[in-house]
Image (cartoon, rainbow, N blue to C red; front, side, top):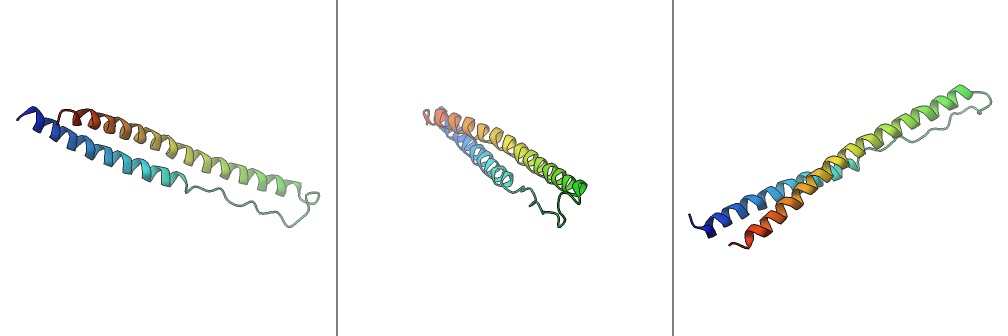
Length: 100
């Protein structure tokens, strides 16, 4: 196997790895946009009549919002890692292409 054919094979492998990592990152970016906190529903009673109900509604909304943000944040973190791998494989493929 010559250096040129070896470089071609490595280039193809790195290009495939770049595509796989890129598609994985794109999927994770998309999934990170899906978690949405629920809409806050105003209680039917006035705050002076049902303080506990109002406070509980706000707490439930805050907790749901925190969970949605945490889920999106985790997916964003994973997508950033996969994007970094994509950039690394792409750079390696560009370097190997110099030897073709």
